[in-house]
Every structure is written in structure tokens, then in C-alpha cells.
Amino acid sequence: NAGVTQTPKFQVLKTGQSMTLQCAQDMNHNSMYWYRQDPGMGLRLIYYSASEGTTDKGEVPNGYNVSRLNKREFSLRLESAAPSQTSVYFCASSESGSPRFFGPGTRLTVL
Amino acid sequence: GDSVTQMEGPVTLSEEAFLTINCTYTATGYPSLFWYVQYPGEGLQLLLKATKADDKGSNKGFEATYRKETTSFHLEKGSVQVSDSAVYFCALSGGSGNTGKLIFGQGTTLQVKP
Image (cartoon, rainbow over all chains, first blue to last red; front, side, top):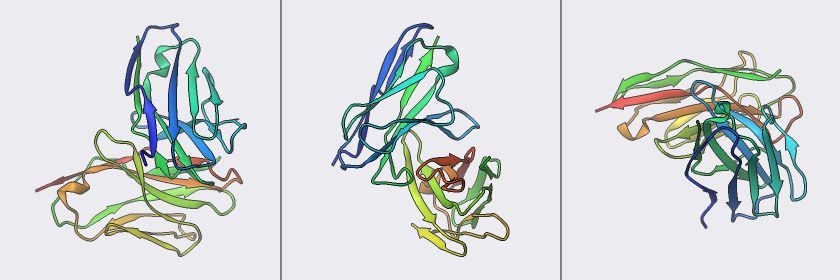
């Protein structure tokens, strides 16, 4: 089992560019999550998906969209990147309830 | 709203020293409490959890007891090793009925010197 995988690992964007962060899990989990991690602020929930076909906003959803493509995959899209979105992004999954497994993260820099 | 407060770091200890990282929380209802660990360059891993008052979570020599009367979930280890150097996050879920969504503290960096 690979667990939770994320691509890419690193990305540099210019302000206004768009990109999609990919996440996949091979544990047949129902719930998937996207968090961002900023220095001194812990992790903050962007969006989550309790089950295939459903998504819901978390604490900091503005500027992001998500797609639960199927049970395995949960992508995060930045339509028009801003410097405030410079962060490390983590995807996580669980069978139900709170996140159990986290991916290795994507380090995004927006210039 | 719900929140988690951790002691500020970095915490620097010598190998075999006793570790305490303080965590207090504010929540409505009856949250579950968690400690996650993040080793350098990696994602978070669940270290331990407790789901109700007076429960003790334990793993890899780490322990934390859910204290409802003091709204605390302090992390302890009797003898730390260099390999324990990492960032530790306290978190809660379910306090306001939003089960499945975690609220994290800001993280505490632990540095263990040989």
C-alpha cells in the first residue's frame, strides 16, 4: 500500500496562474481532506469530502476549489494563485471520522 | 469557536530527559483529542488519541490523559531520544458536532540533543 500520495512535491507559480494539486489514497477510505500548513499556525482545513460525491468547506476555503473524482482521488485547484496561498498543502484520509493518514505534502510558492 | 493552545517552542532537551508538552483546549460538547507528530520533511502521523474524559492514549513511550476538568491533554514521555526530534501537534475534533474535522494547535518543536 502506498497510503496517501500527493503530486507534485514542489511547485512555483506566478500570481494569477492556476494549478491543481493531486491526491490519491489506496486504503478504500471514505473521507478525504485538504489542509494547509503555515508557520506558527498549525494546520487549517481547506475542504473535506466525507464520501464520494460530497464536498464541504473547511476553515479557509476562499480561493480554492475541490473535486472528489472518485473514492480514491481528491484534487485541490487554485484558479488564480495569490502570494497568500504560499504554503505547504497536505492531503489526508480516513475510513470515517478524523484524519488518520496524511500525505507527504506539496510545497507551493506563489511569486 | 473551538480552539487548541500549545506551549510555545522550541523545547530543547538532552537525551533521556523527561518531556512534557502542554496542550489545552476550548470546545463545546465532548471532543476527541489527538497528538500528531511531524518528522522533518514528512507529513503528519497520528501518535495517540483519547475519545473521552480520563482516557489515556499511549504509543511509542508517549502518553497523554484527557482531563476534562482542566481541559488539557498534555503529552509526556519519560526518556526522550534524539529520534524524537520533531514537531508535535495537539488537535481536537467533534467538539461542536463537526465530527471528522480536526482543529490543530500551532505545533511545538522538540529538539533532543545527544
